[in-house]
Image (cartoon, rainbow, N blue to C red; front, top):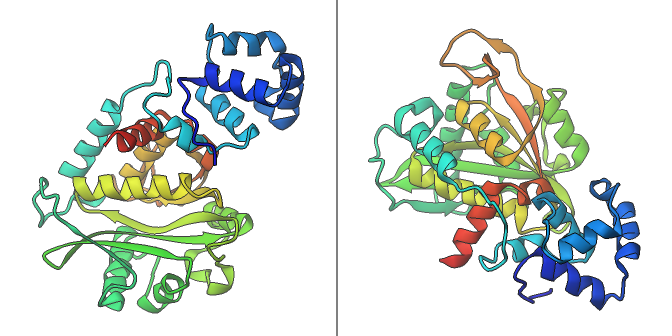
Length: 318
């Protein structure tokens, strides 16, 4: 793993190119073959990048680091690595505060003070797992207004699989949030996001072990307050970014906060559920309400989002 620090993409590109004894022209040709992002790249553009006259966009910077065999999240997380015109997180934080303070069905927990940061964070090996899964089933059934019916046995078989990750947030023994991630192949993920397959059709035969490349699927999530929302979001982002074996993240947004989050993370919409009439039901997308909107978030695309970059840099500086 390369731990060399760079001041920016100009220094990085120049050093990597010269170390590999590549001319600017030969590098341009190799990058054209490497990714469609560089389809019209020429040596003059590389010269401008190396001299700092212009900078490639963040998605191209990620691809450059992948081309040279480096982990982009390790380089881009360094606050000393210059990223020109990186937007702030203010708009995202404003959205998060609004969603978790005022609307229970989108994430606020009615029994916990909004300024309460002292929660317990438990995993699937904690006590009373089956009771927690009963609560999760109830949460899902209530959220979907019984359109989708889950039971404890269905959840337990998936959660107890070795590669499944489950997180539970508690304060004073009150469950105020959770997230459950399973690992599946691309075909299974596509079937779930398109609606061709329902979650209740999943079995352990569909799940993939930790040491194999796979897609993450957020099977279930609920965020009951601002601090839980922040921790849950960080966990989701870094779970995808820090492990190269996690290729992408699939997610069905069943409430408005899930739609708004994908706006910030550049998630690609892949499908949608049935149209709904109740203004408090489901997720609002382009002025209409649906039982869900499904998204796929590619690891490389996530690395290039201003939100992810700001989060990584904030974590690195604390």
